Image (cartoon, rainbow, N blue to C red; front, side, top):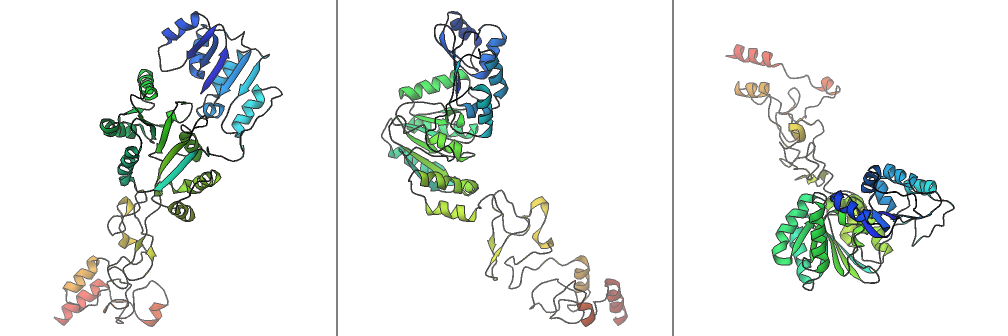
Length: 416
């Protein structure tokens, strides 16, 4: 990702994360071609250490990615420093409206060349794609199996979603397989060292975030493993594209969990478009469109159906039992709580204070237990033990409500 600017003599590289001094020293010796990231080139322009007034050839590589990262202001500022009479080339993996707009502003009478279908995301057919639906706890074991199945010294990239996971995996794998991590928190010197070791084969396993998903052109990468699925299928295509380059073939293994279910349909299209096998588990996730991100349903013990589980945790699928509701709530206080597996007609809620006092006073079961079960004797309104308690006004006509607590206690005192 970056700019290619023809300036003086030879080829020089300008990028952030590294000291400016050595870069400025090299630039002062002259260059024909400058390869630069937008931020660093703007810094040097503001320092007036480089002039773009003689540029005749401007190339924007990975234009969509630069726009995604918010570099549009820097891009436009640089272009203002370049003569209008120039040849401009723009390379982009996708063609969204933001890219189209900046292309219309920067290019004059452009010729558009499309490789493949611009309206459809397509993966390299030279890459064998294997998608495995499995829980998080089984990922590491499966990863080790894949690594052991490769020839010793094979170059492999493992993509993770977080920097912490990159470091953790690299530590766990380095003794057996020779792994190193690269991510945004690494200094530029550390990144350069790790990439150098990876290219040379001294460190054949690279564990990385999406900083290595684009622009990394290393020969002979045999396997890509998506330990964590990315935030979208576009990044998936870029990740697996690190292998199978320049006519070579490669393999891509992707671990897919219930939490990734929202990407299932798009991933299926990518697999089908590249004539790859689609696992039945992936189709199942696509059809039901849910998973760990939704509350886990639980079987009621006798109703023969599912209960959505009121108040259950949604981030891990719901606990499904009483007393684990969110915000400290309890299922027994939900007005529409269904069977919870404690009895044939539903669980039995804890009796109220008044009900316990009545029972202790020897009321003989007059206290209501508010059960929905038709088999609970002595429950319900009035003297009808078979009638379940209800708030419906129709039931006041059929059976009078039970006496109040004070009335019950006074009646008990009179009887004594």
